[in-house]
Each structure stands twice: as structure tokens, then as C-alpha cells.
Length: 227
Image (cartoon, rainbow, N blue to C red; front, side, top):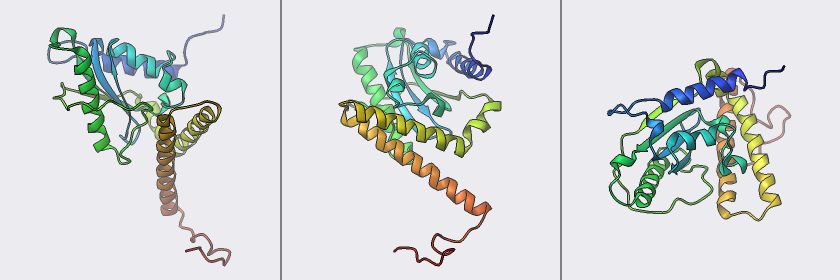
């Protein structure tokens, strides 16, 4: 009988996710078992790409994003799990909660959101929905780790692979937008994805010219480059 299990590559990534979420905090609690919390995903350049919060346990929520248990963000082509190289989490344990958990979660998510926006070179993440503005709060200790095994990391990090993948995601997102009555936020996500693609493609062109110097456009054919 054929093996219906996941591929070795997927299995290896899932194992890394479990390993990260089994990290122990200062009280010897597995961070993935926190009932509540906020999280951020980062790409292969360390650029923040998505922020969220959860009331269903950090382990469950992150698994839904990054495995075959699809979320709206993945289904709508807002978030491509292939792009996620690192995760950062801010666990909130039920036994430590004092006060309205909804307000605490919203404040934590908003504070994380503001933090990663400052870190982002584009000043943007891919979230479709606006994160409600609240007062900033003191964040709990965070934990950050890479979820891609060493053998896969260099392959997936290659800019040409990422450019092709990102272009495909943009095409799929644009198709969704063209076929539905979508929110302004989804169109904002499309623009952010396009900016991310342009930035990566431009950087790749610069790298190529360093390795293989060529004349500027228009010089080879004798045509003048437009001002």
C-alpha cells in the first residue's frame, strides 16, 4: 500500500515547529501550551510578515497556520506558509491572567504589531484586517526561533525560489480580488506583497550585476535611456 504520510520535507518542518513550541519558559512550562498569546511570523530576511493573537492555545493556532489545517489568511493567499522561516511568540498563561482576557489580548497584539512595524523595512505586514488600536502594554517575555531545518533553509532562502513563490502568491491573491467583493484590507495586502516582490527582485538584480557586470539598458543597442 502506498505511503499516505506527509513528505520528509514537511515532516521535518513540523518537527522543528513542535521543537520550538516545546521550549520551556522560566517556570518550566512549554510555551506552545499557553492558552493565550500573540505571535509574529518572519520571512527569510527576518522581515515581519504577519501578526496574530489566539485564545485556542498557541500550539493549535500556529499549527493551523503552518500545516494543512488552513486558516482564512492562508486560504485567501494573504499568508504563504512557505515564506515563514521564524516564529516569535508572547505566551499568556491562564493562571497568570488578571483582568479581562479580551482587553489583555488586544493590547498585547496591538503592542506586538507596533513593535514589528518599527522593525519592518517596508513599515507594513500582510494582515488583511486592521488590528484595533489600544493602549500599549508591557509585553510578556517572548521566544523566537527558526522552524526550517538546516538542510532546507539554504534551498528555500534562495532569492530566485522566493521570487517565483511570491509572484505566484500575488497572482493567486489578485485572482481572489478580481472574483470577489473584497475588503480594502485585502487590496492593501496585495500592494504590500507587490512591494515585497519588487524589493526582492531589485536586490537580486543588484547581486546579478555584481557577479556579471553588464552595460545599462539602452547602451547595448545605442538607444538612450529615458530620463
